[in-house]
Amino acid sequence: MFSIATKYFDIFPCEFWSLENFASCAIFNDIGADERNISNAFYGMLHKMKRDPKYSQEAHERIRKLLEDKKYDTQSVSEKLAKRKALSRVENLSTPPKKRKLSARSSNEDKPEESTTGRVISIFSNALVDTMKDPLYRQKLIEIRNLFKGQNYRKIFESENLRNEYTASYSPIRTLCYLNIFNIKRIDFLSNLIALTQQQLNVFCFGSGPGAELAAILQAYSIINAVPRLNIFLHDNFDYTECLQKIVEQFNVKGFNWNLSIGNIISSTEFDGVPWEQISKSHLITACFVICELFRYNPKNTKRFFKKLLNEIRFGAFLMIVDSSNMQYTTYIYKDKSYCIWDYLSRKLLEDKRFDRFSEGMSYFEEDLLKKEAYNLSKCNCKYMIYKKVSANNNDQ
Image (cartoon, helix red, strand yellow):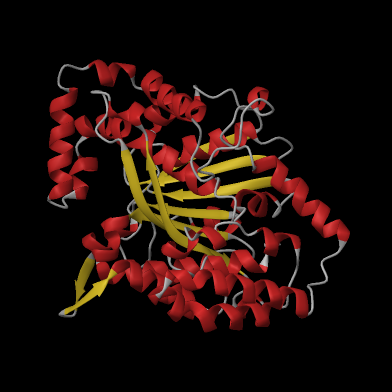
């Protein structure tokens, strides 16, 4: 259960999160409130706040008064204690267990601390040490960068001599970016995910051959105690098994299984290359930096695939989509019309009554340690959306 305040903060544009008077959700976390009253209060002030940020002080006082005057949410003591316990397991996600009591709270709560950054970098540098020592490594990174600029994504992954170089350079920062999203305290994503099951947690990741999703999940899993058994299902067009195995060997994590399935998910209208059985069992399905590529390759089949995916996701599971912040300007052409990919995905999910928006926004991460010559990226500015399936399909009821 996440607070009403969290739900409505996720609806607002990013600029409202940074307002001093709204940066803390304390008045909402400590005091329950009637959802309809909060909704009306916020929406009634949105337009004026956008024109006049100074109005935020007046808005803050009005909302506080609303909370004091209206009915409070009847959340039981046991529910509050359960939520507090779940929060305590994830609030220090970025800090190794032995250092939690010694470390001060970061001023930027959404950013993993340096210890985690160093750990992630060492995971990939140790796993791909031979690749990074290759005299042609820098030259191949330039080739990859040029292919990205030309939006020729498939050639990067179709070339066997570029896959490991791509993984070594791009996966560390993306791993940190995913951890950044997992660690956003105001959405409390990890504790909500863990609460779905007490036996085993199943995660399915599309386009995850380069290992960033695997590393992020294992890093989070290795820090949180008392979580269920973990199964990670990875899927990609190409075989990254050797690379993924080297990444897994860098973790000393027990109680988890992983496997990689290989196939083109939109090669046919039947979507035979998609392991739907694994998807239907999963509590979290991720599509990170892959949707834009699919729309570029085959927009017609991608739209059909997305529709089928929403049907196959189990009741109570989460869908997380992450892509470059530039995706908000990325379009695809279909039947002589131009469509914004991100707006299309967001609209389809909002229109689907089976899904509820859990969180949507921007995640920015920058790390000076990745500016060294061995890496191509030092920052990752991405958009993300997380939706939860809150009702079953009609034929399941």
